Length: 222
Image (cartoon, rainbow, N blue to C red; front, side, top):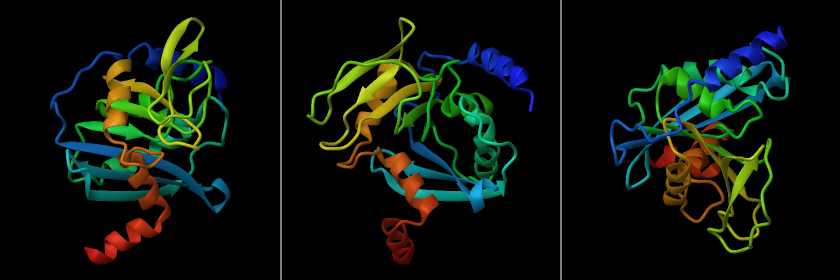
């Protein structure tokens, strides 16, 4: 595994990321959610993609792809491990999203290329990173009140937001992926919150990937 080559590719791709709003359809007709996990001790990569209708946020399509994992876990290079399965799921979609939420980092990454940015570049769709933990950057303490935010700062640059999405829950780390600005990334995540810690697109992607009860009930109703 040539880490130096991967690092150089990250730097080159990060320079291509657009941090300005560039939507073909606004408001979006469809908002996507993406979640990636690993099975069989990491040997299989599982990617789930969901499509929600906007503004109802009703689940209208879901796809899951399972492929052989192509590289080991290396901190800071997770997007290379995750994007092949995401591409496999993307190719199955009948509806393509106008905006995609990805469970992971956008530019809130040491070299500004988390999986949301990397995948957003590959499929050329506006993307937002919605991460459940911090990879880099510092922030001021958050109030307990839902909706409280603080900027996430790294080396003097704002790389995202820290959002208290639900009381008594750990915050989310929101960052632009590609073709989305800082302000718009936070605004759309807030718009898609529905009383849960996660916004609906990534909450449903996680439910589909994990076959959670809410998704199974929906399957039965369908």
